[in-house]
Image (cartoon, rainbow, N blue to C red; front, side):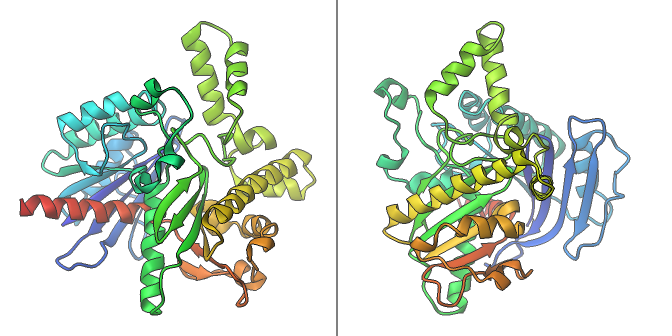
Length: 404
């Protein structure tokens, strides 16, 4: 079976094709592509096969993003798409598992828009568009929150009136597909080495969006994000945790009627806060690092605030778990920014973390250890594999459907 995976963002769409084959192993990646710059004057399009060969010329002249994607994956020599899997940020309170998309599921997602007004409407529109373009395929939604359903009530419950809790207002946690893929990769590595999965583990997913997750025996106990992906540690364009009174202050300061004020503050908190607000630079860690090296006080402060927020979360989760056995970095920054890893870990010696500087600075495999041999806590860098995790879930759901 061939699965098309769609992982959409605010200005880009990543897509990949996997082959599940006839065996029980992991889905095999065949092709991967990205359309970026959506909403801007120019689209950037890349499309490669599993060996890294550029296929970007396929449909590259078409200005419509979804038609561009369709032309690429349906081009000459491409496999027939049997199923499409989508990363959907927020399922709301009515959907509690990954599932095949039906009219009822779409109606439930429409009701979840109130929880994720910046994410879910675009996801719903994309799903409807793709269902029209691939009418013969089965379509599945995979949610970023499902992995965190193992969080205990004490971790997921807000101290607010019961009326709102009954409506589904709680801490959902996000980056679940990334965390689940990390656990699978760590478990596979431990199986090869005939060791046990680290019992007390923290996963720091650091990219444009950032979160930290506490896990025990591979199960999520707590995640820094809450009702929405805006909370937790400082991110590229989001502020992380804020005093609720600050939100009220921003609303009072906003101009216009109620809806205009809400939209203004929502835009500020999602696109104009975080590292971009502190550094006054684009949302790019490399640009912030360069500016800091050139003496920018704003960039230096942005790095210090970011590092401190992540370090605090890791330290708190170390206390929550009663100590750490492993700490994993993933996501674009977590995987590639050597300095961020070193700066975050430099304050965690009391938690038993000792970094191997040479290992941290060296390039390596998709799963590599960067802690010193005598470190009490094993520190790993693991490549984020959200798309593969979606393909795994789609393959399982499709297989179960055929057995019914």
